Picture 1 (cartoon, helix red, strand yellow):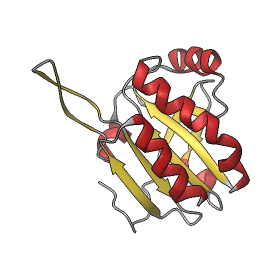
Picture 2 (spheres, rainbow, N blue to C red):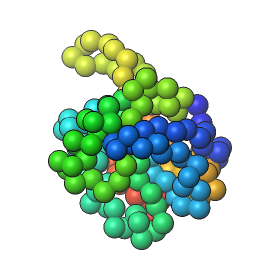
Picture 3 (cartoon, rainbow, N blue to C red):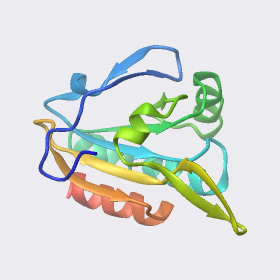
Picture 4 (cartoon, rainbow, N blue to C red):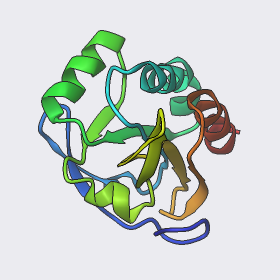
Amino acid sequence: MPAIGQTAPDFELLNQDNQPVRLSDFRGKKVVLFAYPKAGTPGCTTQACGFREQFPKLTAANVVVLGISADTPKDQLKWKQEEKLPYDLLSDPDHAVLEAWGAWGEKNMYGKKYMGIIRSHWVIDEHGVIADEQIGISPEKSVEQAVAQAAG
């Protein structure tokens, strides 16, 4: 699992348009990578739309935003269009990247335990080094802290 101060492990996933996106392609820019459990659900929509609202500030600060979940590219595209999200949503259906980054684990809903995506975010600097990591964060705090860290 990567940690603050370490180089972010590279990965390549398909976006909502079935196009490959590689993390290392964004060297020279900061990256806010946020993990969310499921497209279209209330908390995830709060988080994604929060980044949408902050997108002008982030792009002005040379920051790229990427969302990641286990949803299919088709589901990602539908949600992106519905919510007018101006950034790529990445599909990790076998949750290999999410597991490697520490955003996959045991969750508990109504007393039932299950494995799933833990809402998280990472801020990666222009050199590919992890500047911030928040695993298990609320949708609102995720946006607030990631924007503060990435765009000052």
